[in-house]
Image (tube, rainbow, N blue to C red; front, side, top):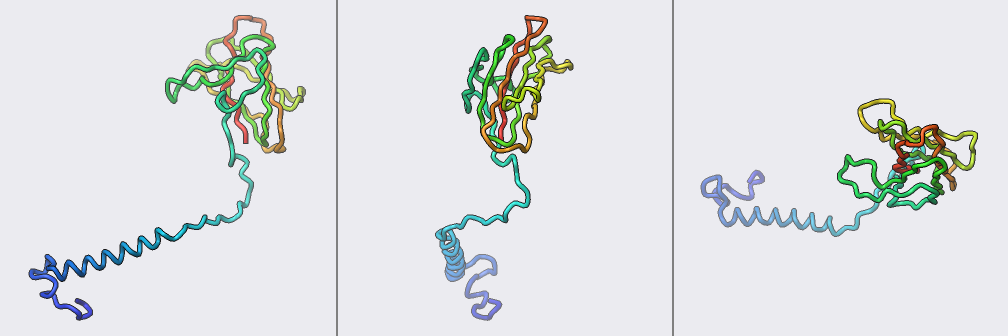
Amino acid sequence: MKAGEYIREELTPDGLHPNAKGHKLVAEEIEKFLESVKVELEVEEKEPVFPKAMTENAYENAKRLTIREISPKLCGFHTDTEEKTGHLDHFKNGWIGKKAGDSIHFEVTASCIAVQYRKTIQLPAARAELVLDGDKEKAILLDGNFDEDRGDCLYLEKVLHHGEKKIHMVDITILPEEVTDTTPFYLMSLIIA
């Protein structure tokens, strides 16, 4: 109408509702649009090309390993196969060590390693020693005792950060205690990247 091809009365008798010719013109415009969308859908999409990262992302392929993802060598430790009862039921699908000398051995390929374990308010609790790649001089103490009273803590302990990406040996052994009746040590997961 602006270009002068049509006058209002040709397309609508009342200036609001289109007549048959008006409906036809609107339908043609909708059909043109839908055809253009259809053509775009038929074109194969290309993978977007992202620029090369400026820095390395050490955690890009991080994995959390529980009894569902890895089967370590157990020497006294046992698996916790109890089903979780909800997302807040954290201490499931891990490994339990009860007495001095119980151990668990992992072999993982990674450059970053951490362990998640329980620190409990049920004192005294078992403590464990973590040795990476057989280096006992740099052993890490995993203390299951939580010195607060608000509830058990899901604790994250870094073991290796930006190290060499290779096969690493992770050995965790329950330490001897003066008290024999301790709350078991609960290893929830190994996190690798």
